[in-house]
Length: 169
Figure: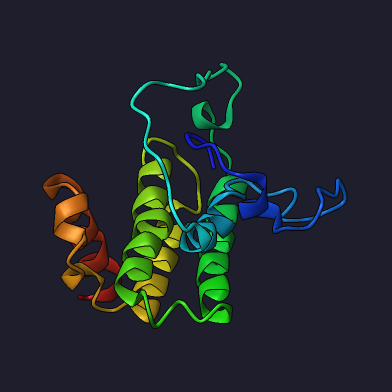
Protein backbone atom coordinates (compact mmCIF):
# COMPACT_ATOMS: atom_id res chain seq x y z
CA UNK A 1 0.00 0.00 0.00
CA UNK A 2 2.99 2.20 -0.62
CA UNK A 3 2.47 5.79 -1.66
CA UNK A 4 -0.50 6.27 0.63
CA UNK A 5 -1.28 6.83 4.27
CA UNK A 6 -4.36 5.08 5.68
CA UNK A 7 -6.39 5.45 8.78
CA UNK A 8 -5.75 2.35 10.90
CA UNK A 9 -9.47 1.52 11.06
CA UNK A 10 -9.61 1.19 7.26
CA UNK A 11 -7.14 -1.69 7.40
CA UNK A 12 -7.89 -3.28 10.77
CA UNK A 13 -11.54 -2.32 11.23
CA UNK A 14 -12.80 -0.60 14.33
CA UNK A 15 -11.27 -3.13 16.65
CA UNK A 16 -8.37 -2.14 18.83
CA UNK A 17 -5.04 -2.79 17.11
CA UNK A 18 -3.97 -6.38 17.59
CA UNK A 19 -0.39 -7.27 16.80
CA UNK A 20 -1.51 -10.82 15.94
CA UNK A 21 -4.07 -9.62 13.40
CA UNK A 22 -3.36 -11.10 9.95
CA UNK A 23 -4.57 -8.65 7.30
CA UNK A 24 -1.86 -9.21 4.71
CA UNK A 25 -0.87 -12.61 3.37
CA UNK A 26 2.49 -13.60 4.80
CA UNK A 27 5.69 -14.73 3.07
CA UNK A 28 4.54 -13.50 -0.31
CA UNK A 29 5.67 -10.71 -2.62
CA UNK A 30 3.07 -8.06 -3.56
CA UNK A 31 1.00 -8.82 -0.47
CA UNK A 32 -0.52 -5.35 -0.64
CA UNK A 33 -1.99 -6.11 -4.07
CA UNK A 34 -4.12 -8.83 -2.51
CA UNK A 35 -6.17 -6.42 -0.40
CA UNK A 36 -5.83 -2.86 -1.71
CA UNK A 37 -8.83 -2.94 -4.07
CA UNK A 38 -11.01 -4.13 -1.23
CA UNK A 39 -9.68 -1.35 1.01
CA UNK A 40 -10.38 1.32 -1.60
CA UNK A 41 -14.02 0.28 -1.74
CA UNK A 42 -14.30 0.73 2.04
CA UNK A 43 -12.90 4.26 2.10
CA UNK A 44 -15.68 6.81 2.46
CA UNK A 45 -13.52 9.80 1.58
CA UNK A 46 -9.95 10.62 0.74
CA UNK A 47 -7.74 13.67 0.65
CA UNK A 48 -5.07 14.37 -1.91
CA UNK A 49 -2.04 16.31 -0.73
CA UNK A 50 0.34 17.43 -3.49
CA UNK A 51 3.38 17.61 -1.21
CA UNK A 52 5.17 14.40 -0.24
CA UNK A 53 4.47 13.23 3.30
CA UNK A 54 7.17 10.56 3.25
CA UNK A 55 9.93 9.49 0.90
CA UNK A 56 10.35 6.18 -0.84
CA UNK A 57 13.87 4.85 -0.71
CA UNK A 58 14.96 2.02 -2.98
CA UNK A 59 17.92 0.12 -1.67
CA UNK A 60 20.08 -1.83 -4.08
CA UNK A 61 19.00 -5.21 -2.67
CA UNK A 62 15.31 -4.34 -2.99
CA UNK A 63 12.93 -6.71 -4.81
CA UNK A 64 12.36 -4.09 -7.52
CA UNK A 65 16.01 -4.52 -8.58
CA UNK A 66 16.11 -8.31 -8.58
CA UNK A 67 14.10 -11.08 -10.11
CA UNK A 68 13.20 -14.55 -9.03
CA UNK A 69 10.50 -16.95 -10.12
CA UNK A 70 8.76 -16.68 -6.76
CA UNK A 71 7.85 -13.08 -7.61
CA UNK A 72 5.95 -14.22 -10.71
CA UNK A 73 4.17 -17.00 -8.84
CA UNK A 74 3.29 -14.63 -6.00
CA UNK A 75 1.90 -12.05 -8.44
CA UNK A 76 -0.23 -14.83 -9.94
CA UNK A 77 -1.47 -15.74 -6.45
CA UNK A 78 -2.16 -12.19 -5.25
CA UNK A 79 -3.95 -11.30 -8.51
CA UNK A 80 -6.31 -14.20 -7.97
CA UNK A 81 -6.74 -13.19 -4.33
CA UNK A 82 -8.00 -9.80 -5.54
CA UNK A 83 -10.72 -11.51 -7.56
CA UNK A 84 -11.61 -13.94 -4.76
CA UNK A 85 -11.98 -11.12 -2.23
CA UNK A 86 -14.01 -9.02 -4.67
CA UNK A 87 -16.31 -11.98 -5.29
CA UNK A 88 -16.62 -12.73 -1.57
CA UNK A 89 -17.48 -9.10 -0.77
CA UNK A 90 -19.98 -8.87 -3.64
CA UNK A 91 -17.98 -6.32 -5.61
CA UNK A 92 -16.85 -8.30 -8.65
CA UNK A 93 -20.09 -7.95 -10.61
CA UNK A 94 -20.72 -4.42 -9.37
CA UNK A 95 -17.26 -3.20 -10.46
CA UNK A 96 -16.53 -5.77 -13.16
CA UNK A 97 -14.90 -3.30 -15.58
CA UNK A 98 -12.56 -1.98 -12.89
CA UNK A 99 -11.58 -5.44 -11.62
CA UNK A 100 -11.09 -6.72 -15.17
CA UNK A 101 -8.65 -3.88 -15.88
CA UNK A 102 -6.93 -4.15 -12.49
CA UNK A 103 -6.38 -7.88 -12.98
CA UNK A 104 -5.16 -7.35 -16.54
CA UNK A 105 -2.65 -4.73 -15.45
CA UNK A 106 -1.32 -6.46 -12.35
CA UNK A 107 -1.53 -10.09 -13.44
CA UNK A 108 -0.81 -9.95 -17.13
CA UNK A 109 0.93 -6.72 -18.15
CA UNK A 110 3.10 -6.31 -15.04
CA UNK A 111 4.14 -9.97 -15.11
CA UNK A 112 5.12 -9.76 -18.78
CA UNK A 113 7.20 -6.64 -18.17
CA UNK A 114 8.82 -8.06 -15.07
CA UNK A 115 10.12 -11.16 -16.79
CA UNK A 116 11.11 -9.60 -20.14
CA UNK A 117 14.69 -8.62 -19.28
CA UNK A 118 15.51 -11.96 -17.67
CA UNK A 119 16.41 -15.29 -19.17
CA UNK A 120 15.03 -18.38 -17.55
CA UNK A 121 14.05 -21.76 -18.90
CA UNK A 122 10.33 -21.54 -18.14
CA UNK A 123 9.82 -18.08 -19.69
CA UNK A 124 7.93 -19.32 -22.75
CA UNK A 125 5.80 -21.73 -20.70
CA UNK A 126 5.00 -19.08 -18.12
CA UNK A 127 4.11 -16.54 -20.85
CA UNK A 128 1.75 -19.11 -22.34
CA UNK A 129 0.19 -19.84 -18.95
CA UNK A 130 -0.35 -16.12 -18.37
CA UNK A 131 -1.98 -15.67 -21.78
CA UNK A 132 -4.27 -18.67 -21.35
CA UNK A 133 -5.32 -17.65 -17.84
CA UNK A 134 -5.97 -14.06 -18.95
CA UNK A 135 -8.10 -15.31 -21.86
CA UNK A 136 -9.93 -17.77 -19.61
CA UNK A 137 -10.85 -15.20 -16.95
CA UNK A 138 -11.28 -12.08 -19.07
CA UNK A 139 -11.51 -12.99 -22.76
CA UNK A 140 -12.57 -9.47 -23.79
CA UNK A 141 -10.05 -7.53 -21.70
CA UNK A 142 -8.81 -5.60 -24.73
CA UNK A 143 -12.31 -4.09 -25.09
CA UNK A 144 -12.20 -2.74 -21.53
CA UNK A 145 -12.60 1.08 -21.67
CA UNK A 146 -9.64 1.60 -19.32
CA UNK A 147 -7.30 -0.53 -21.42
CA UNK A 148 -6.54 1.93 -24.26
CA UNK A 149 -6.46 4.86 -21.84
CA UNK A 150 -4.08 3.34 -19.30
CA UNK A 151 -1.96 0.91 -21.33
CA UNK A 152 0.35 2.57 -23.85
CA UNK A 153 0.29 1.58 -27.56
CA UNK A 154 3.63 -0.25 -27.44
CA UNK A 155 2.49 -2.42 -24.54
CA UNK A 156 -0.86 -3.11 -26.20
CA UNK A 157 1.04 -4.25 -29.30
CA UNK A 158 3.23 -6.54 -27.20
CA UNK A 159 0.15 -7.99 -25.49
CA UNK A 160 -1.56 -8.56 -28.85
CA UNK A 161 1.49 -10.37 -30.19
CA UNK A 162 1.80 -12.64 -27.16
CA UNK A 163 -1.93 -13.37 -27.08
CA UNK A 164 -1.83 -14.21 -30.81
CA UNK A 165 1.15 -16.53 -30.38
CA UNK A 166 -0.23 -18.46 -27.41
CA UNK A 167 -4.01 -18.27 -27.78
CA UNK A 168 -4.56 -17.54 -31.47
CA UNK A 169 -6.62 -14.53 -30.44
